[in-house]
Length: 121
Image (tube, rainbow, N blue to C red; front, side, top):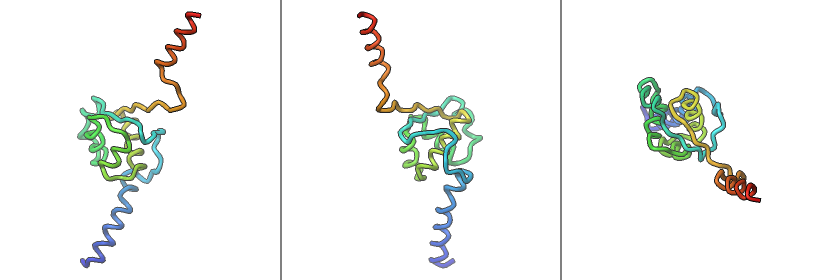
């Protein structure tokens, strides 16, 4: 195989790989911001051998909680691929997510202090 053939093959493989990993999907089944924290569940650890290579890598990586952006970077996959993989793993119970608090939403402890202040009036 010539050097050019090898380069063409690598290009096609890189081009197809994300498509193959996600089954052709470009959007996750659930909305997951890139800063969403992902952690492995006990079920995910127990059922690790039933997963494909990429999903297994996500579950193993998330034993220590990781943001979706970190998962994409560590696995060298596009961000959207990581979002699709994590969405599937959430649906199957292999991982759980903690979505970050939106900056426009007040934090719970602040609301509790306001409520306490109102009660004292």
